[in-house]
Image 1 (cartoon, helix red, strand yellow):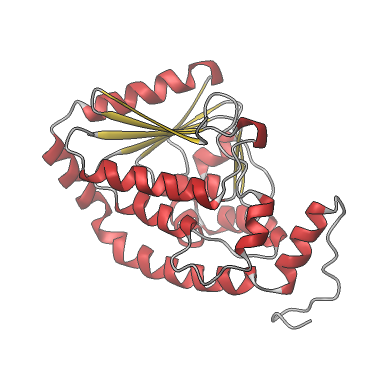
Image 2 (cartoon, rainbow, N blue to C red; image 1 turned 120 degrees about the vertical axis):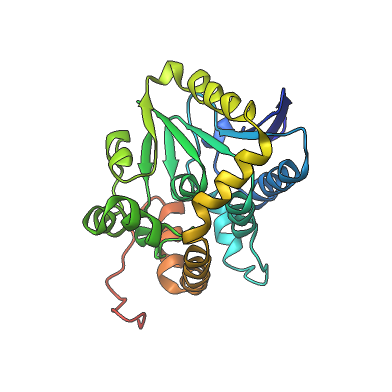
Amino acid sequence: MSEIEITDDAGLRIIRLNRPEKKNALTRAMYSAMAAALRDAATTPAIRAILITGGDACFTSGNDVADFRARGEQQAEVPSPAREMLAALGECPKPVVAAVAGYAIGIGTTLLLHCDLVYAGDNAIFRMPFVDLGLCPEGGSSLLVPMRGGQLLANELLMLGDAFAPDVALRAGIINAVVPAGALLAHAEAKARALAAKPPAAMAQTKALLRRADAAGIAEHMQVEFAAFGALLRGPEAAEAVAAFQEKRKPDFSRFFAGGKG
């Protein structure tokens, strides 16, 4: 069974995260498969729209912890698979729809900022716990969340890092609408198929124009984010956060001081 299932049907490519036993936690291999599926869809004329889903129970719980820890020792990967996936998503000229049920943690939330339409089930739970992991925001979230939802709400979501409900995600400009969980996949697929049925050149040009004004600023900001994220990922605070998670204890950051010196 593939952890990333790709289905093409009548112009629609469905990319489904399929690792339910791990709440769709993402590995490097899964990121690479998603990036490849997005790149291929971008250059395949028969594909006119893309739907990303984790099914009706969970979108993704974020990075696989064991894989995440190993990634801290493999920063020679440039770009990292996660970064390559986000680039493929952000650069895709075709409309991308996301259907979010259950957990959308970390990059499970930030990747939504690069989709064109996002629908959440009323059972969705969002969280961006980067600081709690000894990290900083990624995926352009430290720019796009305040841009869309305002500075104070962005401070709350990214600095406190608590879980938040779909109504807050709607206020933050992360999702388009909340729908009953049982109707989520059908609703999102209907929207994706509606996009796929439209004139493809006109659709691609419209998407490009909608993104044109902010594209350079987002790309530059993401470069800064990823550099800071990579440095923190190799640092002692992230090591303590991941070790505490694996040892099922509360992390102790008391020996660390502002400015990154411990």
